[in-house]
Image (cartoon, rainbow, N blue to C red; front, top):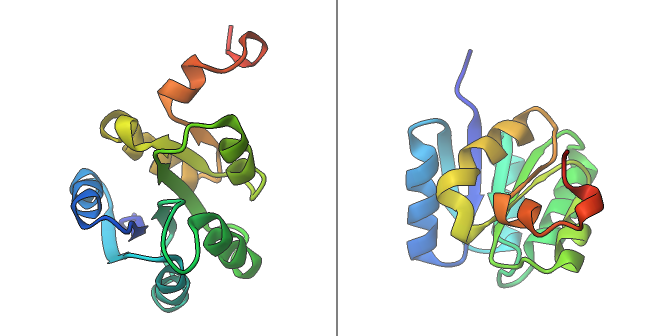
Length: 140
């Protein structure tokens, strides 16, 4: 089986290097871009299996970039890696289709399973978000 090809979009260079480091042993990281417009261009040229993207980025945010990418490739795996834990932001991301939503503070533990879930077209939430879900939404 060939390695899963991952394209990263992160506007902070230090965080981009950290995310690349976390992914590098398990997946083939094919590029790192720093804004949403570059993510669109790179994804169209490189055809990744999964994009791992920040939400807040210059020129075009990650949500809009993913909306446009999914219009072209509905089965594209998506992982949002973000600091935004607000329920309305999570809901906006999940409204774009199956995706993983990882808080940057949880990336060390959650990023690899999030990418694996994205490859399978499944939804994955950071463990911190699962702990704060309303009681009716937690697994029993």
